[in-house]
Length: 248
Image (cartoon, rainbow, N blue to C red; front, side):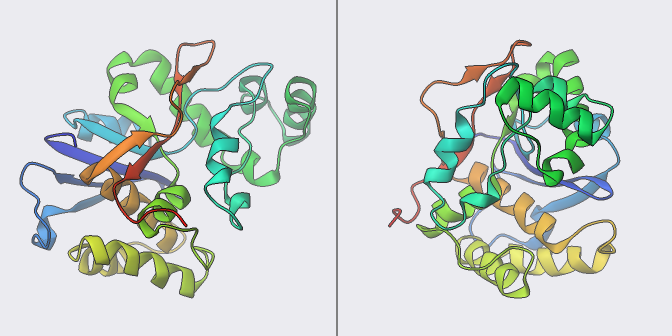
């Protein structure tokens, strides 16, 4: 477990949602004020506020390959039986930087043999923003790592979740998992729901960032034994929680 400040990050409509706490001071059932939630317009602004963090987990692809697919997505899908569709195929770097959806589809089909989903295209601006930032900030590259909230929730619960995170039942399911291991998050979650409009921050954005923070708060490991490296030197892997319920 890292010491000092830890941060869970999820992209949101308003920019980037960061949930942070001090792992040196936080104990089970700690006061709500130990958990801080902020929204930043850019990843650079987020880093400026949290550059002192020991580790930051982000739900956004880090490392873009050219000519071959990432290995971490198939590995993640194996741990999400019935919910594997929540892990989308990450586009190649050229497709992420394409000027239009059709152009991105053509490039990705040439490079990886498949077109982009429209969902993947919609987050390409944030993938580009994070990719550019990590290329020019080696300090962040060492401490800002990728994770996947749906896989993290499944690891904590011991099995894939029942409901979609976009459904009210799914949000209650995820909040119950979080509060079962960290009671303080319940009040913090409800305060955050009332703080931002849904056009800025969705409820599942808050839950996703929280489970990444929970991951860093406990024991964690890389999903792949050996990380891939893209042509810019960025490591490709997923950080996942360990030591919770055993998968069934």
